[in-house]
Image (cartoon, rainbow, N blue to C red):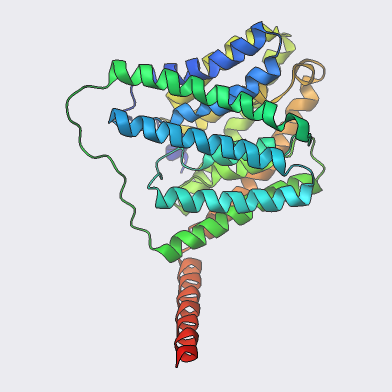
Length: 355
C-alpha cells in the first residue's frame, strides 16, 4: 500500500500538454488581473479547464469532444447558478446532476480521465455561490469566454502537434451492462448530493470543497484504488495546506498569485498522471488560489488553512464510503438482480394487460 502511494508511474502524456493547460488557465486569469476583475478571470479560468478533455489523436474528433465538453461546462455553470437559492434544493439538484452526467458520459463513451469530475466540480462551486439571478448571464458569459479560449488554443495546439497521417480509431470500448452503470450513476449522484448537504448542515463557509473532494476520491477504478486515492488526497492536502500557509505568510501580490496559478496548473498536469498524491499537494495550493478571494487569502491565512483541511477531509471520507459501495461486488450483484426482477415483473404486467 505504501509503495503504491509513493509510486511514480510512467506515462505517454506529452510534455507540452501541461504547458497548454497552463496557458488556457492563465489567459483568463491574467486578463482579469489586468482589467481589474480578477475574480471574473478566475471564474472564466475554471471553465477553461475543459482543455483537459483534449484526448483524441484525430483532429476532427478532438475538436468535437472539446466543443461538446465546452457545452457541458456551460450547462454545469447554468445548473449551479440557477439552483443556488436554497441549500436543500442545491444538494438535491447537484446529486441529480451528478447522476445524469455519470450516466450520459458512459453512453457517449467518454469514460477516460478526467471523466465527470470537472463537470461536477464546476456545478458544485457555482451552486454554492450567492444566488443572484441578475448575474446568471454575466457568469455564463465568463464561462463561455473560458471555453472559447481553450477551444482556440486547443485547435492551434492540435494543428501544430498532430500528424496528418491516418491514426487508429481511439474510441473507448465500455463493457459494463446497463444495470451496473445505472447503479454506479445512482451511487455517485447520491454521495455527491449527500456531501454537499453535509457541508451545508455543518455550516461550512464554502461547502463546495466537500462535494469536490468527494467526487475526486470516487474517481478511482476499484475499492483499493478508492482508499488509496483517499489516503493520497488527505496526506497531499495536509502538505499542500502547509505549503499554502507559508506562501500566504509572505503576503504575495495579486500578480504573483495570478502567475502562480499558471505555474501550478502546469505542475499539476505533469504530476497527476504520475503520482496522484504528489499532484494533490499542488492541486491544494492551486484550488485555494483559484477559489478564494483576495481578502480571504491575506487577512487570516491560518484560519483559512484549518477550515479547508476540515472541508476536504470530510469530503474525502464521504467519497471513500461512496467508493466502497460503488465497487462492492456483492452490493452490485444484489442491486442488479433486483433491478432485473423488477424489469421482468413490469414486463409481465404489461403483457397481462394486453391479454
